Figure 1 (cartoon, protein in one colour):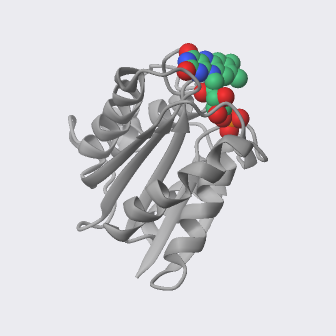
Figure 2 (figure 1 turned 135 degrees about the horizontal axis):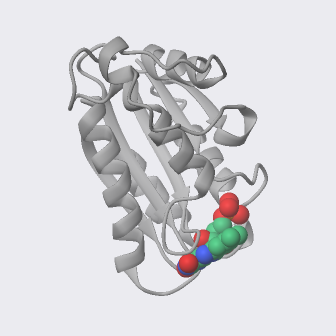
Length: 179
Ligand SMILES: Cc1cc2nc3c(=O)[nH]c(=O)nc-3n(C[C@H](O)[C@H](O)[C@H](O)COP(=O)(O)O)c2cc1C
């Protein structure tokens, strides 16, 4: 079974990247794990033209297809997103918008192979879990329209930098046990 772990932050060496590294390490004994960072890919914004509602494809030819190839190869997808202004980072939102050709609210639409499972991880510096829940909600919504079954989530408050993660290792390890 293959797992894709996505760093949904534009920071390649920050707290999100560290969580991706911890989760990938935990899962690598049981799965074939690949991790990617949203910022390794170059793609345009959705233009809202809705041509994909008729064609199930975007007129823009860029790295979105490379990311979707990774989604297609994976049996399990773990999205790890920080809070930026109490929401997902713009790069991650731009990616989700570009997944409209795969969105199941219109026909025809492109389809991932069925049976994929998803997990959502949110982190933030502030103390309240509600903000993590909002980010998890965005990921769950995305998974739902991609027909990825969301099977679990983890919210981590009080994380500003990767050094804040060492006391949270056990929490992350316990989360990985349910994957
Ligand atoms: C542009 C920006 C906006 C942020 N907004 C929030 C916020 O609204 N609430 C919060 O709790 N943390 C916020 N943070 C803090 C990040 O969620 C936190 O530092 C996280 O660990 C960043 O992970 P990264 O360095 O991997 O991107 C923000 C950070 C940045 C860079």
